[in-house]
Amino acid sequence: MQSLQYVHLSTESVQGWRNYTSQAVQLLDLNRNILDSYVLDFFTEDLWSRLNPKWTAVLDKFCPGDLASFLQHGASIK
Image (cartoon, rainbow, N blue to C red; front, side):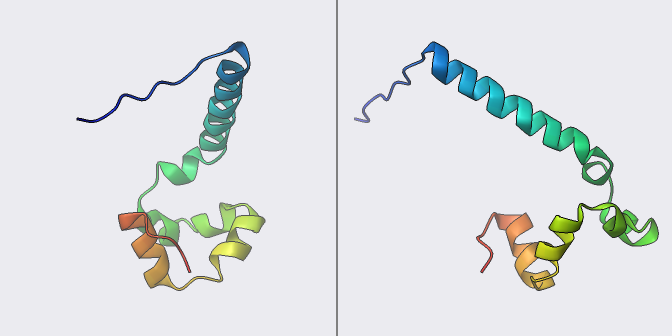
């Protein structure tokens, strides 16, 4: 038999989750044009140039196979 786990909610924890959710939505909104695109668009519409330069600097360090594995399976990137 599996034991039940409970989450204790308080004003602080609810506010923390609200802030986290709000920041996540802002991140998605900032990158909506890329999230809603197809892989082909990355090449035909040069979406790489629209990425945040900090992201491109990090992503440039990984081989395509590692990135594909991460995107498909949620595997960690070495």
